[in-house]
Image (tube, rainbow, N blue to C red; front, top):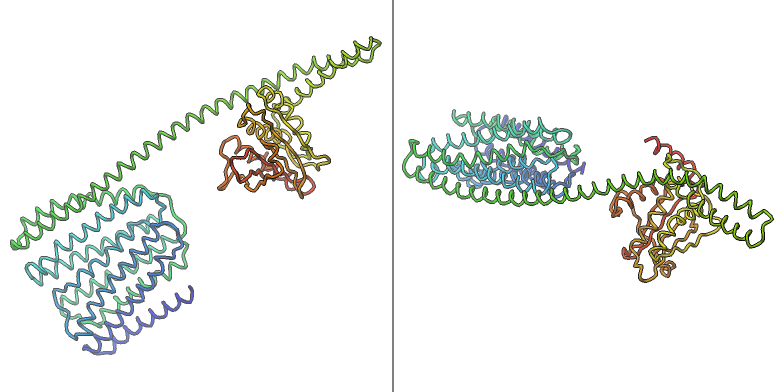
Length: 583
C-alpha cells in the first residue's frame, strides 16, 4: 500500500508541475488548451482512482465510515465526468464550450455527495436505527439542493435563455454550495478528534483552496482574462492535487476509533431538513413576485410543488420510522422494568439468605457447646463399667453426636465470612463436608448422592469456603432439574488429569464414562453462564486459575471444575489471591 501511495503522489506532483510549466511557457492557443485539459482530466482520474479502494477497504468497520468514502468517490466521479464533457468540446471538437452549458449541472452536483459524506458523521459510532433516520434527513437536504439548482439555473438555460442571468444564478448557487461545504468541514474539525479530525482538516484546506481559486477564476472570466491553461488554473490544479492526496494521507491516520454518539449533531441535521421543507412555500411566493417572465414563474412554481410532494413523502416516511422506533423503545423499557423488578426480588432474597447464613452461624456455635458436653458424657459412659447393652447405647449416642457435630462444623465452614485466601486444599475433604450438608435435603426429595473420590489427589490452591460454595451450588443446580419420580442420582467424582484436578457433577451416572466436556464456560466472552449465581461460580473458579466446563450437548446435566494442582500454581495463585482481596 505504501508503494501505491508513493505512485499516486509522484503522479500527482508530476502532473501539477506539468500544468505549471505549460501555463507559464506556452502562449494562449489551441495547444495550451488541449494540454491543460488533458492534465486536468488525468488529475481527476487519479483522484477518483485514489478514493475508489476506500469504498471496500476501510480501517473502520462502521457502515457510516464506508458510506463516507463511497459518497466522496461519487463526488470525484461527477467532477471527472464534468471535465470529460468539457474535453469533448475543447479537445475533440476543437471549439469553445457553449454558454449556457448543460454540463454545469454535473459540476454543481459533484459537491452534493461530498456534503452528504460529511453528514454521515463517520467519526461517530451510530446505531442502525440512527443511521436510517439520518439517511432520511440527508435525502431531504440533497433533494433541496437539487431543487435550488433547478429553480435558480435551469429556467434561464431551457425555458427562457438568458446568459447573464444564467451565469449570475449559477455562480451564486455554486458559491453558496461551497460555503456550506466549508462551514460543515470547519464544524467537524471543531467537534471531532484524533485521526478523523486531521482528515477533516486536510479536506478543509483543500476545499478552501479550491473555493478561493474558483472565485478568482470566475472573476477572471467576468473580466475576459481567463482562458483554459492560464495561470488561474495553477491554484485550481493545486487544490485538485490536495484533494487527490487525501486518501493516501488517510492511510497514515488511525481512523478505526469512533467517538460516542452526539445527539446535538443529529438534531441540527434534522432541523436543517425541516427548514429546507418549510422554505419551499416561501420560495414559491418569492417566485410569484419576482420580476421574471411568466414562463419562468410557471416553471419555478411547478418545480416547487413537485419538490414539496417529494419532500413531504420523505417526511411522512421519517415519521413512520420514528413511530416504529418509539414502539421499540417502549417495549424495551417495559422489559427493562420487568427485569429490574425480577433483579430486585433476587437481591431481596439474597439479603434474606445472607441474614439466614449469619443466623445459622450463630446458632451453630450455640448448638456446638451442648454437643461437646453430650459427646464427652457418652464417651465416659462407654468407658465405664456399665452393662454391655448400656455401653452399646452410649456408643450409638456418641456416634450420632459426632455426626451432628460434623454437620454443624460444615454449617460453620459455609456460613463463616472470611477473606479470600488461597492455600493448599484437599478437594475430597471439601466435597465430603459440603455434600454432607446437602445429602439430607436431597434425600427428602428422593434424590441420592453418589461419590467416587480418587485417592491420593494432590492439593489445589483454593479458598475452602469459596470452593465449598461452588460445589454446593453446582450439585444443587443439577438436583433441581432432576425428575424425582425416576429415583434420580447426583453423581460426583474426582480425578487427576495432567496438572489439574477434575471434579465432575453429573445428573445421570451411566453417562459418566461417555461424556466429553468440550465447552468452556467463561464469565467474559461468548459462552457466558445463563444465571447470575452460575456466573458468580464461574468467576470464583477463574480467580482460582481453573475452568468451568460443560458438555457440548446442553441437554445433559453435567459440570466439570478443573483446578490446577498446588505444585504448579502456588506462586501465581497466591499473588492473584492477594490482588483480589486487596481490590
